[in-house]
Image 1 (cartoon, one colour):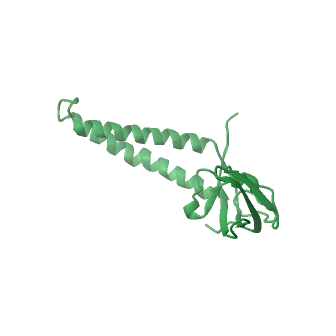
Image 2 (spheres, rainbow, N blue to C red):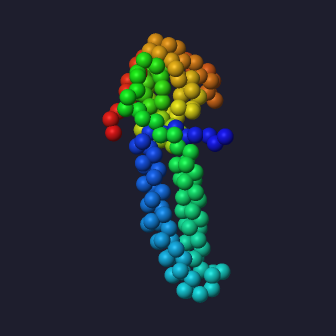
Image 3 (cartoon, one colour):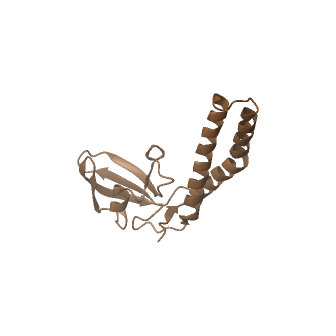
Length: 161
């Protein structure tokens, strides 16, 4: 069975736009660079040729990766979420019971998650531990740094956009 990748409509569109850019812009540019470098003669000592071929490999690899992710994408509509329990797309506010530090995260798919941007993967240890919890519930998560305990302070709908 093919593992589905949960993502928002916005996350799906970003990946689709990147794929389109790579296929329609980056790929033709690198092909032209390879053709130009070939015209310069001996390919064994042609740094331009080798750099262009390496760039082509990166582009083709990313195109294959994006096609795979888009084919396995499970786009989830977050606009009509109930916020009584933690589900994909909601924003959660937690307090670390050991340090009293408060944090807020939106639960997104692994392709969209970015701690710097205030989101974590629904498939991460913390994300998995929160699924189905309600405000006031304790969330216990095993991390590489040890067991952490949080209290779920708030669940809110995803931001617009």
